[in-house]
Image (cartoon, rainbow, N blue to C red; front, top):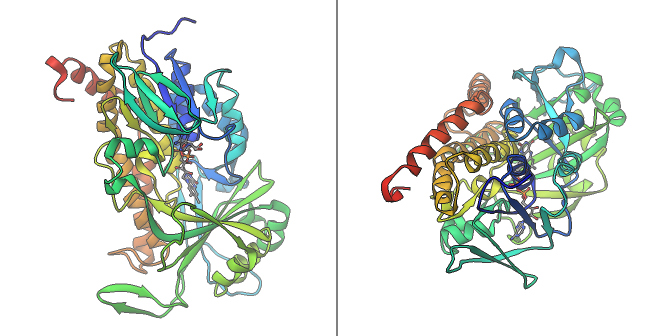
Length: 453
Ligand SMILES: Cc1cc2nc3c(=O)[nH]c(=O)nc-3n(C[C@H](O)[C@H](O)[C@H](O)COP(=O)(O)OP(=O)(O)OC[C@H]3O[C@@H](n4cnc5c(N)ncnc54)[C@H](O)[C@@H]3O)c2cc1C
């Protein structure tokens, strides 16, 4: 099929944002190439869950993205839990028999949808024809040539050209640095003072320690007991015995594996900005969660002896002032890296891809001159929502540990904040968002001289 456009799109980075965008563009007949620093596509061995907005966005990108997800997706196993997002449990429950009633339950129209990240990526990658992805290409710099083409320089000494470059290069995005400048605070993410142990454990072992209901259906083990707290300079400070962590579980790989993420809050800084993960041992996790109840501890005992700890960085302290400059833009974590407490970062990456692809494919977008308008419309459509998610996710992570302003340890308030905020994330109409972005683009493209991008 002959390309429908006279311009070429370069995507830097082949994670969820880059791959979904590449698929969405390719199947809209827009010429696209992905430049990925790694020798091949790859994702970490961990779970990721998607809410209804993400599923809508997958379908908007391309039906194949949704099919890839559907093929590897695991929902809550019990029929009675099909709309349950998470049952919230008291992580401090010390009852010996381990039986736990849910303190409250959060639902949505699709319930919990967990996938093994690597399996999902593997499925999506089959939709990308040979030649579209170039590997071993770590972007270093971008300059503009006399003919208006953007010249990308890679660390392996090679170069490539495109008319527009989309940085899907993740939380430490080089493209973001090129847009805002290396001296701007938003060029670098900051530590949220939370880290997470991530583990995948065989489901049959999880059932032995948790029982069927809690192992096969998503659970959030949070702090629901009275612990001493004191006021420090007007800020709630939790004592060491207090709720400084929470743990979530959901099934992946068609219910054969349980994904665990155990979050811990700390006051110290993360020691090494260059490395956002560090190796730890199971005993470290058990020490961190020593005050928790039997279910949490028994789950952690099932993790591997050597674990990865993930530092939770985000762009919440220093949000980017813009998602684009000229014909460079950022999408996904590069634009709005968030802590994972809403479980929605990847979902918003896919929303970004759907909007961007529809804008590039718009019938009014024909040449290089139209591309800045596309990026301006993308920025206008996406920045507020992306940056809201980053702040809201911080708030929700703090709520789980009684640190959130105006909510504290009031469980009714925590529950209603989760419901309200999850609604903002989930209850979108992707078709409407696309139509609004396209209407905005049309206006921008009709501006005389296009000076007001
Ligand atoms: C513990 C944890 C749990 C999470 N759980 C969920 C969840 O349940 N649901 C959810 O929706 N989200 C979740 N998220 C968030 C989600 O993982 C991210 O939002 C998403 O993976 C970001 O995708 P991305 O493609 O933007 O970035 P990345 O996945 O970081 O991909 C960036 C790609 O760019 C490449 N790259 C980087 N720099 C360069 C360069 N200079 N040149 C070329 N290539 C480059 C990298 O190699 C990589 O392949 C979680 C995050 C964490 C940390």
